[in-house]
Length: 435
Ligand SMILES: NC(=O)c1ccc[n+]([C@@H]2O[C@H](COP(=O)([O-])OP(=O)(O)OC[C@H]3O[C@@H](n4cnc5c(N)ncnc54)[C@H](O)[C@@H]3O)[C@@H](O)[C@H]2O)c1
Ligand SMILES: O=c1ccn([C@@H]2O[C@H](COP(=O)(O)OP(=O)(O)O[C@H]3O[C@H](CO)[C@@H](O)[C@H](O)[C@H]3O)[C@@H](O)[C@H]2O)c(=O)[nH]1
Image 1: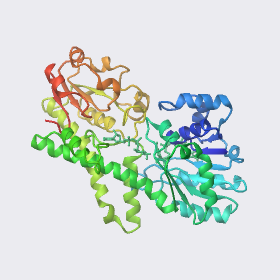
Image 2: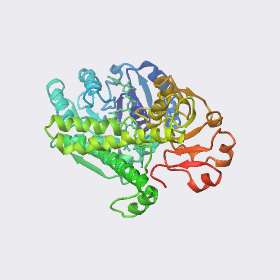
Image 3: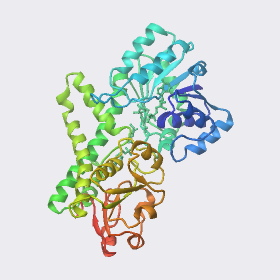
């Protein structure tokens, strides 16, 4: 099929490349010319495992093009909207102005029978509003909402082989669903379940899924606080409750909490939308989920100050990891970067490192010091904080690391190290909710 993808960020660049990988003719459109130039030269503007390979093969095959000009999307049969919906600062609500702008730009160029497919995460009610605009301005085209569930770090795999496909379509619009079936034929033939529903349900599935995941993480982080107060071990607790298949072990890793461009903003956006609907009380628990999550960051700062003898001033802190999760260069709402910034504000000399995130971190937090290697970060550190569980940090040898630092003190903000091995090597080891 001929496909356009409007917005080529973390979601859109992967989606465009993956659609071309599946054999479709794809054009990626973005208002950011630098991004478009990089993508057209097969250079991903961000780090995502597997993306360079499919971007390269798709651009080389001629099936994938990029353009800053939306007119180049005019002959597409399916247009995916993948622009950002950031948190608007005042209310926490999702800012849909980029979706609206991209949609308005599409209206005059839509071909007969074209399908506009929303992928961005939007407040419930957005699709119905856009469908009304479409009926008035381009009745020869249709709208569907097809939320995206990919995880950064696994984005290519998640796009090519998703857990499920959700299509929100207008009442009785079988054609929209069959066009999407055509787009996703490979995944459907491989057995991916698909749920065909209305717009509101499709929009809500997305934010409900993220709200549930965020709640799971904050639940275990609340347990980690209880564990810290009682001498219990939150990791053993998570393993034990996780054996119950109704609960499941995944997303029960306690630590510095969740960050990124999705979970934090999506729970705030969902709460704000519920308030608009007069249902603020219904989702009040998500405010607590958010509060527990932010408290984890402060707890780590407090623990660091305590481990540094009551004051961070003049102490050297080695920060391992700045991204919000491993295998991504994304530092949006990153707990690691937040903790580093707080310690820096308390007078610590924070030296941060990360395999992929330094450039993004530096542009957001230029006041911090960054070094390219773990070895340099560790040099004469008074305290080490493991804040993002990159593979290379998980496998650090406590004896080797011990020879580099000034003091053998570590806070394992992701509970990924073996406390016994680190203590045996003479370290003051502290995990989150671990005795
Ligand atoms: N990042 C993820 O893992 C992920 C996963 C699922 C859903 N989502 C959702 O997908 C959406 C995009 O997220 P992202 O992380 O890719 O954001 P992003 O900020 O990385 O990318 C958004 C892109 O849209 C472009 N853009 C803005 N206005 C435009 C316009 N009018 N025309 C063309 N391009 C325009 C921007 O220049 C930018 O490149 C959000 O709603 C997000 O919640 C993201
Ligand atoms: O047990 C856990 C699991 C995750 N996290 C943290 O939670 C955050 C989010 O992790 P993850 O969900 O893996 O990353 P994202 O790439 O942000 O993906 C989420 O957000 C996307 C955008 O909406 C959705 O598409 C995905 O389905 C959803 O998992 C990260 O900071 C993780 O470190 C924990 O602290 N403990």
